[in-house]
Image (tube, rainbow, N blue to C red; front, side, top):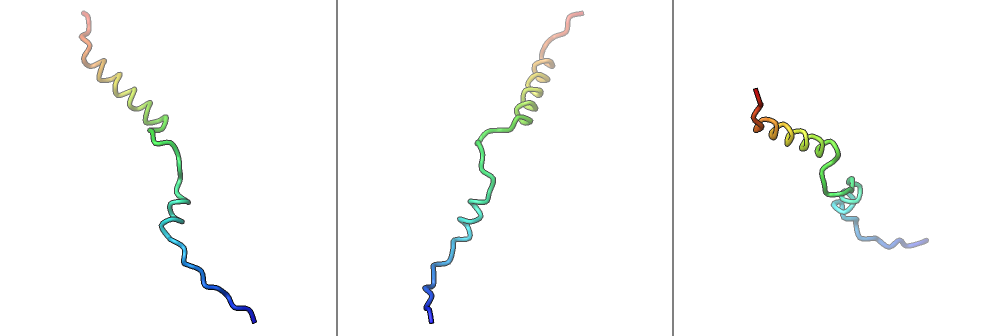
Length: 51
């Protein structure tokens, strides 16, 4: 009969972190476009229109 060695239980937080989506820490393309669009809108509101 074989004896089994009991192993240390896994850390559940480490497993969750490894399965999380990893990626660059910067805004995506959609957020960059939205920020640029808002900046353009703000700039156009400050421009005085010629008659």
